[in-house]
Image (cartoon, rainbow, N blue to C red; front, top):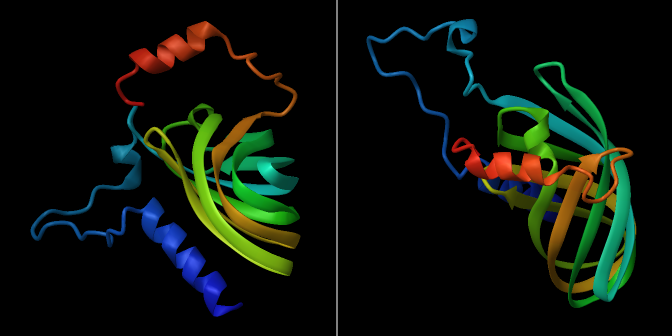
Amino acid sequence: MSTVTIALLALAASITTGGAAPQEEPAGREQEPQERRKGDDQMVDCTMIFDLKGWSAIYRTAKGNGTITCDNGETQEVEIGVKGGGLTLGKSEVLSGTGRFTKARSIKELYGAYVQSEAHAGTGKSANAQALTKGKVSLALAGTGRGWDLGVNFGRFVIRPAGEKRGERGKDERRENLRDPRR
């Protein structure tokens, strides 16, 4: 693994965790079993394996698919879409990329559009890592692929359940997301 790849992965992990080291329990306080802490505010640990293929020439687009798996047993096949623009040119493909989600309470919170910004340059085989956000939910992506690219771009990284058409989730769900203070 190259030094650049390791640095990109460390940066993505740092951004996703807020750069904070895990904190120990205060002295004199015993740690509660995990089962006792579970409740409505319990966070789930979710990961995604994905493939993505796309091109860019000022406008950037890519499509792919993947599988999200959470530690609470939830699993979902998903479709991924990337759209954006900037000073960018290239063609690329990522096979068996990985993603790690943080600060989510259920798999449903993972669907939607994440903000994405990226500076990139590469030819042949290349590695990439980046951190994306959607409200309080963060997504750290890492992957290797092939192709060539050069530029700086901004855009959206959209995840939706496989087979769901764009805009299929109705206004009621979007309204509920606005009312729920936990999101």
